[in-house]
Image (cartoon, rainbow, N blue to C red; front, side, top):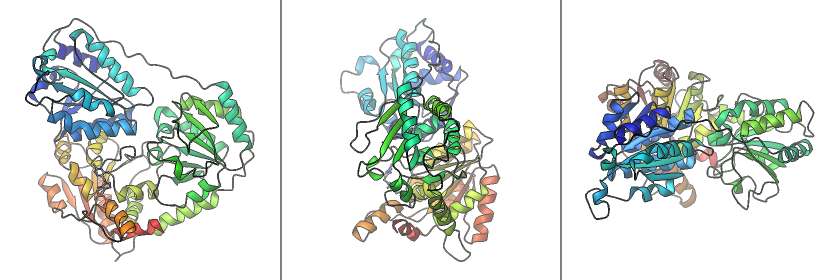
Length: 538
Ligand SMILES: Cc1ncc(C[n+]2csc(CCOP(=O)(O)OP(=O)(O)O)c2C)c(N)n1
């Protein structure tokens, strides 16, 4: 069998349904092999879009999303999306073509050392040096990408190797069981939890993966433990639950910190240091920390756990639930209720009134009412992301996706394409600043071509808002942030997509409801007043 066909057979063996990418001459054999397979190749308008689609696919499914690019510029264009998956712990396999082996030892057209370039942004990568190695290399790439903690891997296939032949077969993808927790580590955790006066759970990215959420919900509701989530832990415990104190992770002191300051024991569940540095919640190193994760804790001055329970997170939480039973803990479960009340009242305070300018938090309150509990909001990166993390209550795991490891602008629109493909019955909203939108708005054409239905909400302030807000706060004025924009409504319409630009509160409510519930591709351009951002600092 031709190597390209064997390669694609190995992808089928991994359960791959879509490959996102941009074609090129050096990946021609792979493209034609894909055409003969059960896998659908989705042409995108930029390799970065393809990588972000694979990234969000990975986060939503737990199975590696796959992106494909040609050598040289195709591969360099993939980098940001691959790096995003790497730091956001999203399973992704990137495949790149390469020049024939006869010319890679010398300066030659479009040749770059892509394997070395991808090494710092992947868990593992390799070039296929021999046809018979294909089954091992593909299996290894998926195994590494999907094993906790998941992330990006990369395979390079040069055009001459793709055309050779091999009679090897794919290696079966056997499910690997993750280890159960150590009995002594669990016993110590139970003891610490029983004694703590102010225990508090931090639910991170890992609390969303591998079905840990239901055990976590049982733990916090049975023992009335307060829980805060990081940006990427959104929805691990529903914000409707009386135990939820919403989100931590801001670069300023927010209301939730009143509870965090008081806590004496932190149960860190799937907490990821790449997302939020522990200096912010453990500045004096006086908190007892229990680390519950798939992997050991990073060595970090402000994160020195008293105990590390390194095992499958769901299994650890299940064991804790069994051992704690219904027995009472020492803490008085009413201690954090005032903080929750203050946060809820604060979110409500941003409700818009007719005649006032639109603001991001005001619009989010309308969006929350318009969107169903199980719908999906994908955030881009900027000031609006802070508001989404803080003011948009989430009720289900993966109900709100935020990039917070690499925190890369431009993820929301391509991310929504992947989400719409994954579950066409789910309503999806991509919320973005005007800066991030124009970084990858070309993927609207991909969405339109695929018949994907979602709504893009653009918070338009003609500015790189987060940056100017921070510059103003620190230096009194902003540099290099002002933008001009095209007419986004006309821009959407030029793709054959519904465009909205409400100017009154009544139009805003009407248009958001219409856009979100219409099950068509739509863009809502909202002129927002960024002045509201300064209220966060207060
Ligand atoms: C790819 C990338 N480039 C630059 C940055 C730095 N950055 C963070 S937020 C931001 C501004 C975002 O502006 P916009 O998309 O308009 O959103 P807003 O802040 O106005 O809500 C920039 C430039 C980044 N995070 N990612």
